[in-house]
Image (cartoon, rainbow, N blue to C red; front, side, top):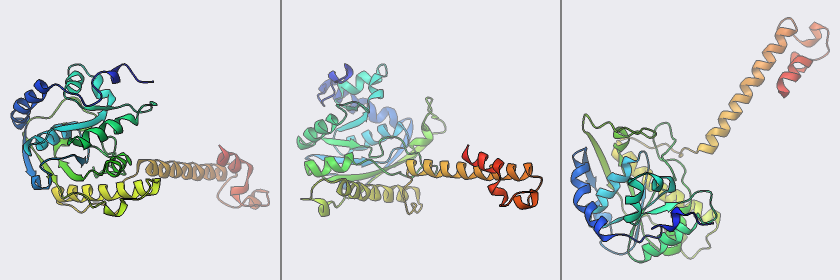
Length: 294
């Protein structure tokens, strides 16, 4: 079922007055808050639809990205999580500016891609955060992304320009509500050449194809992040689900080890169960078995 909020300006329609307002107010206002270094403007197509794939560290990334797009003479259309549209004032402004809310967990969640496809075909610059949220990588590298960006690019045959933003997280770290304005910080924004997705055209959009195309897009984004950071990116991107699984396995192993230690203590030492009157090892003792199964 479509939510009441989605019925209000969630299809990319916008107020020209609001857009003109942002063009006048946005760059100087936030330029006073942060120093901005832009590179790679030549990689933006001057017209026609384009997807901008950007890493995500902070809500300030949105502003830095918007200013970069303004600078090259395009207007940004963001795909943003629906909770942002529920914020007072800010949410209203986003709707009037024609931004697209993504309603997670709802039947109509995929409809936003249809709106984005239509806008892209109409010549819009659609901003995509492929990770779906701010990265959870402890070292702030891009993590494994969702495949929506590849689906949109391949379905609509739109070019994908990768982009890296670095430094915005120092002004407003993820999870914080108060920005750290002083001392004034530098935010670097770097756009790269369009991602070569020619190897995926004219192929059925299977999960394997979408995953491979997404990984290629994110590889280019990550390389740009490494360039602005002056560091070498990790060989493999951080995968939250895999890391959670590893953590659970480590916890189970630790519990098992603690259980075996407790069983040995109950048996009077660290020797075998046979030395304590049994026939097997300490790990086979009833106390240890009970601990392992808990």
